[in-house]
Amino acid sequence: MITIYGASDDLIEIDGDISEEFTLHNDAPEVGDLLAISDGTILRIAFTPHGIWRIMPLVRGPGLLTIEQAAEGEESNYSDRATLSGAVWVVQGIAQARCL
Image (cartoon, rainbow, N blue to C red; front, side, top):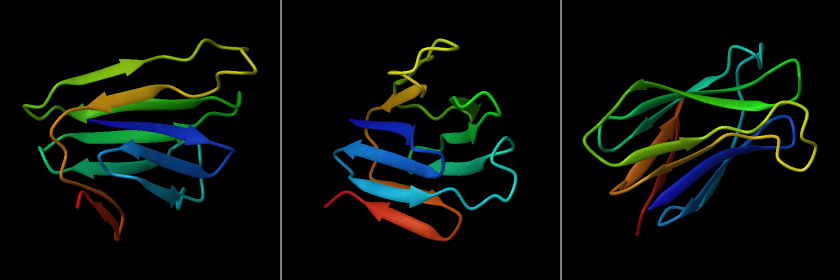
């Protein structure tokens, strides 16, 4: 099981069976970056002008995917959280993290 969420205003965190930190590469953070997961899932993660990380599924793989949405204006919880089961690797651009 892995959890994906945003931190600060430019970091994408992966925790759980895979542990990694990616830097948001897109020059327009509100557009976001794409994450590809080994089960075929593709997610867009973006940092909105309102200071909230949003995670949107573009393609759902066969693994269990849940997304908890962060409430607008809540200072202590400023990121959606996606959890996935069965991930072996995650790719963001050319950066890759693997489960050992």
